[in-house]
Image (tube, rainbow over all chains, first blue to last red; front, side, top):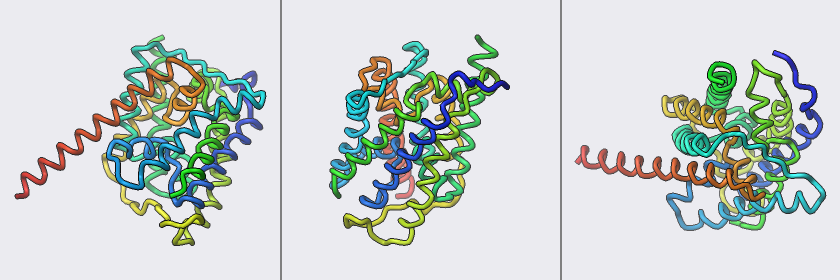
Length: 143
Length: 146
């Protein structure tokens, strides 16, 4: 292993993380809800009264964020190297996996670990492990 | 429930993803690539988020109600089951393949990346498939028990 100092952004990443934690704090303290993106999105497939508007509003905030960031002078960069076929397979796996596993990086990784939830600790360890393994196979064994 | 505070939370969340670099799949894969030139930045994202989250959820756990009214909805399950582990493992494979997890994919979609749209549509299809499978399972269980 070697550290990629050229791309390492400890302060921006720490500050961004603090904002993500602040957003999760706002949603749980003001609205009483967990800021888990897959859960917020997935529950819209079984719409219940009173459970639609706040979810759509949260997702709208996520969608509008790049425009605001751009207006404030920030650069929006997403280097998406995967081809269309890979993106479809990856999207399906993320949709199915987060549904069966009851959460993703935000719900388990941020909110769950903050709550010291044993389920989230196990889930986060599992998806980090398979994420590391997948990139190893894709980048170093198959490439 | 107040949709305005939910919108504000989503907005701050998205700005956090952009500032931290988490909304860039290239950076996420740089973090997941332990055997290559490793970029540890995303560990700092987690640390920053949990630093704030820890205190917020401690406060939330002591309150029965949200500050804007309404019940506090916190997960109560503590048991581990196969669905949790298998689901998380499958999610990690998709995350590693594309470098996208749900939040950053939606943010990149908002920034106008066509490839993010493809990923999000496939992710929605996966969630829809889960919903249908659960409905079928519930119907079958109800049929078997009557």
